[in-house]
Image (cartoon, rainbow, N blue to C red; front, side, top):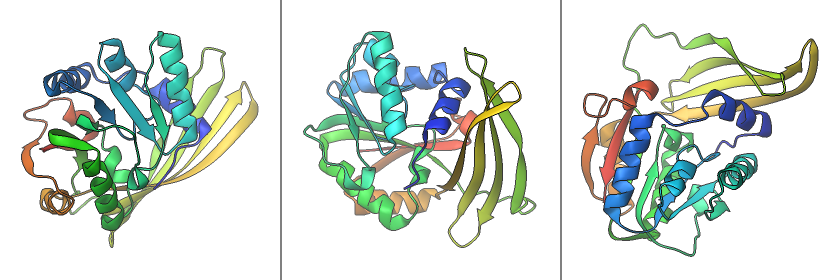
Length: 248
């Protein structure tokens, strides 16, 4: 599974410091309705987890990226709240608790590179769910547009930190026809004025799934799918171009 580095984490926190308000409200309401301990696998630096803890929810987080877990710990400390965090891959999930709800927003489930990896991850996750628990997953569907180019250079994006340093992300995207994935090959460059003070290269493969494919993998790992939501029902899905599946 792809793992985020330190410059990526810093860029991400500056670029997306807060979750979409309606998405946060949706997951908070679902967590309250579940009425028990909540898990956010692939929690990143905590843009969903921390405000949900602040709202009084008992929620744990896991992530494969050490820089992301460290950033989440700092964000928790800054906010004056506590949560249990675990540096673990989803495929090897081993936690001391079981959960009434687990959720993975923003299409992060697409970071798992193969059906085998996703099946292993869902199976491990299923073992940590209480009877009748709910799983919420946002995922990207395949791009069926015939005129979509297979390779593009994306426009660079830049963010500025409070100390005046700037991180610029330059990236290309290549569609991998055989796997239904897109390879994002990028570089983060941190500068102070004209001086480069750090760079970080990143190859990130992001998968898409059809609803049939994801339903099959969920069922094989012990889940029952109940509802698929699109941006027509949940407007926050529009930003990431995702579909949300609710399973139990």
